[in-house]
Image 1 (tube, rainbow, N blue to C red):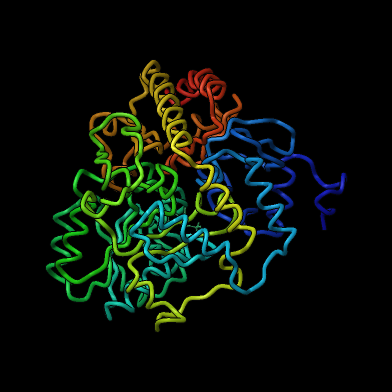
Image 2 (image 1 turned 30 degrees about the vertical axis):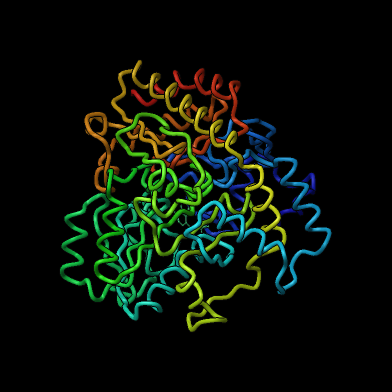
Amino acid sequence: PTPPVDDPRRPATSAALFEAARAVIPGGVDSPVRAFGSVGGAPAFISSASGARVRNVEGREYVDLVGSWGPALLGHAHPEVVEAVRRAAGRGLSFGAPTAAETALAEAVRSRVPAAERVRLVSTGTEATMTAVRLARGATGRDLVVKFSGCYHGHSDGLLAEAGSGLATGGLPGSAGVPAAVAGLTIVLPYNDLEALRACFSAHGERIAAVITEAAPANMGVVPPAPGFNEAIRTVTAEHGALMIADEVLTGFRVGPAGFWGLEALDGWDRTQAGTGVTPSRPGADWRQRATWVPDLLTFGKVVGGGAPLAAVAGRAELMELLAPTGPVYQAGTLSGSPLATAAGLATLALADDEVYATVAQHAGQIAQVVGQALEAQGVPHRVQHAGSLFSVFFGQRAAEQPVGSYEEARAQETWRFAPFFHAFLDAGVALPPSVFEAWFVSAAHGQAEVELIARAAGEAARAAAQ
Ligand code: PLP
């Protein structure tokens, strides 16, 4: 056995720690994409993080564009968030009984996303989407669920088919261990394909409980909805008595206070706008009249927990009241509404003011621009796609010529350019998400210094991608 974590005899390099980890943890990681499988090499083992920087166990500092895969909107270890968690920890880690902070967090969610009339806190995005699907089935008495290829909704059995994220990175169509009978209840459609959606509802409309969609997909790279696509999902589902589930686990409270729903349905963002687009607004009293689409159910995660394990399922009151204990749809969790996670989430949402969103959007726009310019200068065919302040780079002539609108198109890119691009950035002190299919996460702690460092690193990275 290796020595305890703080024992000086424990291996002190990422490579040695990875080797020790692989002897006891499958693949050496607790979530597959962390293993650097598609980019090669040993993953950096992180010892600490602060603001826009992470530090590995060797003591090297990196500008971080992983952002804990989304939660770190404010940057890492924001002092006020850390202090809130410390205070909560001092009062007890977990009680298995209701606390006032859970109500406060549910209210904070509803005040930003008013369609979240009721909010149930859970611990992971996977639980949130799994519960939303069960709730949709319980409410409609129907079995089928429609999802789009390239959208990732966590790792519950029924939602793994043609999912993005780690399955895209690993080139996997789905997962072993999912019974055919379960997979058979999920219909997978191409993203942004309204004809396919309409045809599916014509054929199976009365059996479909719900369509689940990422409000703006960001797990096959960033592939924003075509103008009107979310609205059309809303219309078609309503016509057939099915529910619309907007998965905002990744986009919620990140691209704006009201998530991608707020940006698109209230502010009129669309993919034809260049860069990060409009500055997000907050829903006013007239939100229902203004909104071009309103989902029945929403799921949140990542930012809502401020970096601690917390997520939420939310939506129309009469649907949400079908959850136990008021209704027949069962859902529960020993650590649901964890006092530590709730404190982190509350502190994060309180700090996420308009200036935070404007700063993140501005720096995301600048980073996307300097990276795009560097690739341009090296003649690397590419396209940078945005959904609010989220963006990612697609490589290849096809992507350069026309926007990437589906998983099929995302997979057709020149993925082999990413590993050298990634490692050149890493060598220069910039940590990108270790997969071409992931969004780049910018925080409010990223400033001019980080933009300049990324700009300096981008030249070498672009040269590496050119080969
Ligand atoms: N939904 C979306 C859109 C996500 O991006 C993710 C995670 O990346 C999930 C659901 C699952 O969340 P979790 O990893 O917390 O289970």
